[in-house]
Image 1: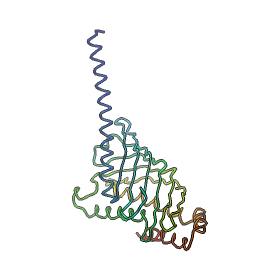
Image 2 (image 1 turned 90 degrees about the vertical axis):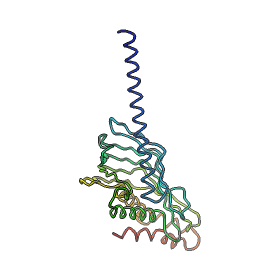
Image 3 (image 1 turned 180 degrees about the vertical axis):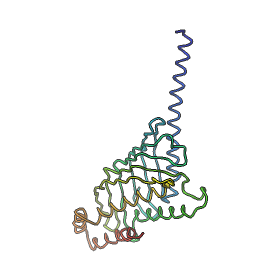
Amino acid sequence: MKRWVLRGLIVLVVLVIAGVLAALYFLGAIVKRGVETAGPNITKTTVKLDGATLSILSGNGELKGFLVGNPEGFNTPSAVRVGSVAIGVQPGSVFSDKVVVRSVKVLGPEITFEGTLTGNNLNKILANIRGTEEKDKQATSKQGQSSSKKMQVDDFLITGGKINLSTSLLGGQSTTLALPEIHLTNLGQGSDGITAAELAERVFKAIVDETVKQVTEGSVGKNISDFTKKLPGSATQQLDKATGGLKDLLKKK
């Protein structure tokens, strides 16, 4: 093979590799920008993502350093913090009106339940999400919606999580509980799909439901009761105030 032909092939291979790397970076940047743009519109809190990767060939990717901040009036650094989220997307759907997500696996999330005299952080964020979802339903234009993209999520798994119980009503003391595995399937299977706000409401409500169960019921609830007995004054009644508003909210349709 002539030397100039070999050099040409080498240059071509280098250009192809550079193009693939650029495309991967481009898609990752799109995901990061989308999360940090749509997220705050939905939760009405800070939403950050350290980085994202997504293969244009397999559709597999990873989100790193995902964080949902707390509403105003709460002191803990975050409501939800996740180190890694593995995702699988149908590659051809990324630039279409409906993105088909084959799987989402949220690994080791940290949920912080912070209670005050006026309520708790998870209660407030869920109310914000539901408010955004209602506005989206009433919006007549794409510009008026939190996100014009529709999605289909076949499998959504949250595993290895923990709950940090932090409330000023307990004299500054805190404890950590295990978050049971949460598994949601067949979200947005219809032709209309599901919006980002609707997906956020389904996932966050599942997290809130499990958090409330762990804080107030069963063997873990007994541990919390034993924990509050060690606190001064009427700490047990104060804990009921911190969680009561959230339980009432979950009873509403």
